[in-house]
Image (cartoon, rainbow, N blue to C red; front, top):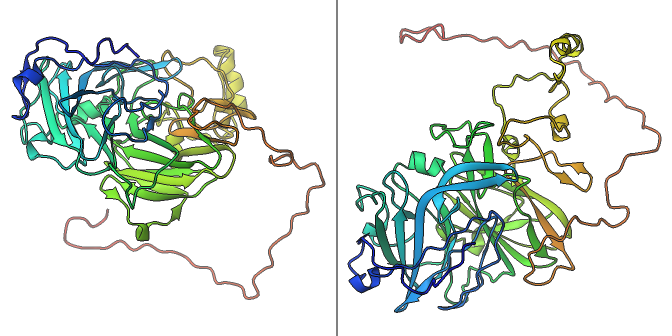
Length: 465
């Protein structure tokens, strides 16, 4: 992270487009200096240096934006700009984001705080910021043309409002959003309760991240912004496994995971080894009478789900989207299915012309997790990453919840792989193979049923289809 360098001091006079009459010229004369983050590692929680106290969140492969206090107002500075995001080791994408990263930094405030956010536009086109889920004056809602003029390149706008209700929210543009969101412009906003809340429990560890998706061809760097559904990279906070950090917790910690979805489709998020309660949405806390235990919850487009559970099972537990293609990287969707095809004769002929030719897919795709075949520049294997038992056959929207008894309170360092107690790992059976048995035949033979299709004949021009 770039040093704050006199973060609490002014940055000099600027030309600013004012979005609120409550901000004086004196306040605008010195913006908070923007803080820039270039590392894709998960940063330590930002303990509030001033203002009302709260239990900070940990943004998976992200960070929290510092602020300054100005006459009782929390002031933040977001810079919308092109960024280079490392999506996995050795693979980077040219995205758009905020303050050096995509997604942008998480903003954390306390219920009742008055916040002032300066937004500087360093993009090549106009932009805005919509504060997704917030209760605020209409003119601060960030919809270009409807609630505000667009922020032109090189200009700075200011948004100011009171964080009226606690919960998990998001921010993103409502200006050319097909391009800007496809390029990675988004971030999370956490409003902590100002006092003990009857529907928001206190937790030991609090994680948050966004679901996002990109279409980046192998060998290229910039997402294809016109893609509607056929993405090839599904990510947690613009990181793909094995580039996604684990969620490290102490055994018996009360854990909260906040997941926001700004992709183009829904994602059933599944946690192994534990049950959780959905305790909140971007609409607010869920009443206790409306909660039930789950191991998978669907997060639809534009939604947030807050998951609470007690980490009472030690181990390395998978957490992932349960859409099978979303746990893969850089998929080639046009590749034909070759399962069951005997390649041996044709492969022998092809290798005479192309010595390095490799047969793939006739037995499924798992072999690709262990192949170290040459790849195009700037991409990653479809399934990659290694665990204590070999190749992990997953990628994309996948991470690991690491629960450890010996983890110290507040320690988020990776403890390494779980050491399984003796006799608790699935193993190859060494005994005799049980004889196969057949199910008993039905007492009464069932008649054969032939399905016939009758096409409707009408006068509406659709007959014969």
